[in-house]
Image 1 (cartoon, rainbow, N blue to C red):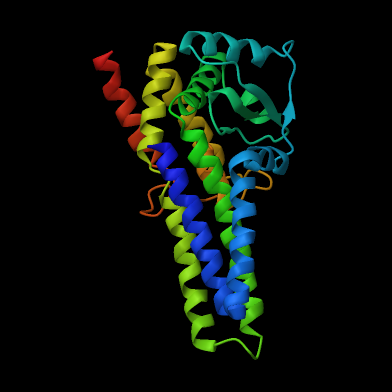
Image 2 (tube, helix red, strand yellow):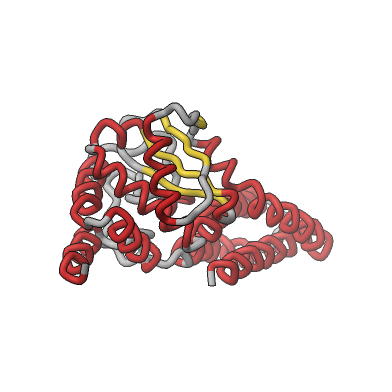
Length: 273
């Protein structure tokens, strides 16, 4: 299913690029846009994880780091290949997983997460990210982040084209209205249900939903008051909690389900376990 979502996103980006290219420069512009889309699709699939890690200046850690051992034990328990582990130098607690498959996965956590959460809560967050890896959520999530950024770049091209006398003003106005909708579609293509599944997988992996409940509550409390440095709407869906300050988590168009609902579902899971 995640592979099909990724294919849809890549095709969708190609269509958007070709349409904009045609609107700006006719058939020649459409052909150039198609070639550009092909190159960006290749980049999004194979290198978008590195782009995200680089954007947040994530630093690869060695096996001697205490957090590495936690990931190694959980990875062995989940029967997964060992991912690369990164630390982001930011005091706001948060975490995400990236990569195109379990064999090319990476988990990144902030310094703030290691300082604010207790060891059990940290382990629960790591288990949540490993659950994303196991269910291939990282593939569509990472590619979607790259494509959403590309859509934003296309929107800036349209604004430039709107000042071009040769451009059709009606088409330009339509594009300016439709591109934000396209970006929203990209964000909403990341199903909120994947967060519930990752929460459940984490609770079962560590054996106690309470640890993840407490972790989610602590992280959201920080997110409501502090934004993660360099956080972008295009890749906000990748984090365990939306990293943008003051985001309405209960919004219909939020990339994350409400934390209250996630905690409620974990509470119900206690009785099942």
